[in-house]
Length: 453
Image 1 (cartoon, rainbow, N blue to C red):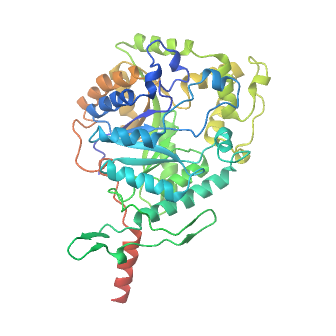
Image 2 (cartoon, rainbow, N blue to C red; image 1 turned 180 degrees about the horizontal axis):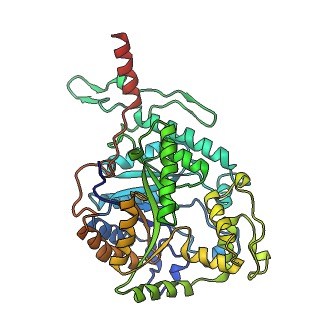
Image 3 (cartoon, one colour; image 1 turned 45 degrees about the vertical axis):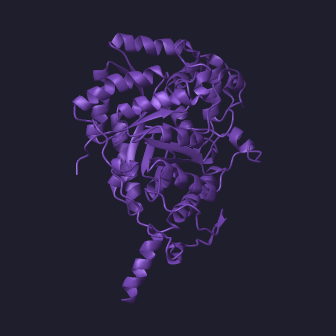
């Protein structure tokens, strides 16, 4: 079946915008980014525009290994599940993709929190599974260095297996609540896991009944080889780093091949590239907005960010000189996706300063700059070709770029028939065109009955 409309997710990590120094902009928020009302206005605008979901990224620490981090970078951000708990109470339809680490939590706690949020929101929650690649994060959880890359992903796969089993530990009809007989739950429909794996030992069952979506939607954002394999095995949505339509089509083929190895159909995984939209009433106005944002960048922050991505302190080298040799991806324990992007751009002859400013100003995803019609043209092209099922919208300046997109680009996409004008009934999983997972314990029991028969 052809897809009816694209998926749109409004993203934020830095609460003032996805430009690394957007907090310096005169129209950026000050201390109100710690206030619920700030996020409520953002989410209400997105819900009014009928967006599918909000995507909240997160880190488990302060970025301060490099000198500029603490002084110049907007490190503080609210804990995402706490924020979404409040936001779900003041919204009715929009979904929430919430980041939580598989490296520094336990499956029972995480499964319980997301099951609870899925009930509270009536089936509107997704879990963005991350493996936490910052040394600063490791230091907050009793470690002297980051967990080795392969181990992080091995742990994440087992973590997801356990979390899904915990969500399934209560079958959909396990709750009885028969006041006359005193039967609260059917014991035959509540299951112990007794899981003993390499990384986790979990008895179960979960102490929250099965979520409305069966499993909260699973999102995965890593584009390393291990990240793509984890997505193909477990994820419903893949946040991808794609910088052109041709690259997106190649990426799609790669993901489809990986899905097939896990017995999954292509339509079971939605591909959402990230983009940074800058919209103006005219092309020149949009360009002026971009250029002004770039004036906010500090060379010190740019070089430190590049150093963090590259796994090497580049401030020790002449800033107008070439990029030195960088670590091998296969042995790098940081963000391999970002390292690969740095190495790709380093091969284009840029100096340290030039590459640092490019990455700091635009990040890893493409800028889409222009009028509402011009921005819609590019979104339409990638969607129609199959390079994307939708987009993670990473607005450089909040709340301005967020509100502008909702009020100008979304109506243009609706006019073209590319985006909904009203919410469909159902859960987030339903609206994304994803099947509700079958309960593994129910399936086993049904198979046993069929075999006995």
